[in-house]
Length: 239
Image (cartoon, rainbow, N blue to C red; front, side):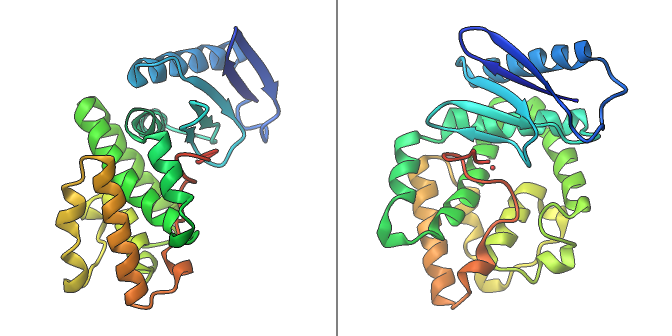
């Protein structure tokens, strides 16, 4: 069963069928887990964000409505739960609503630019949230390692290494050097810029540089789109 929790004037708990994958645990167990996860998310975000759980494909945070949505994946581990909460809290803390809206609504950049900005912003906020909460690092590492092995990023390492530059950047900054992502010597020149990301302005500028580079290299825009979560803002973004 899937427990969907919303936080508004009061707490509302709703039961839904979810592929029969959690019938062995009591409703009370999931209510307790939902409450604890919601409290942790609000504490980390340092604001009273709304936290819901439901039958969704991945986690998301809407930077406008301040709603953090968590999936009810079958056999989800504690590390992955902590990682998903930590990632979305990172957007709550560091992704500015106005900045995101202005950047992705700029018609001169085209619709594909949003995917580049999303990858770069994920790299920035994950660094910042792990710096603020170092205890999350272990969960991020274990969770991304499992996601990579499951094909979450679009396939095997061999397949990912044949993808566009932005997809390889996405996997590299989420899964680390040990994942085996390969860059050309020309592509490697951009990594120090991404390593140094701190501010929103840094992220927006880096996304523009990568976007222009890929266009110049005549990489098809569709080859540079994400296999991962949606974007922070409309996130029903779902990272």
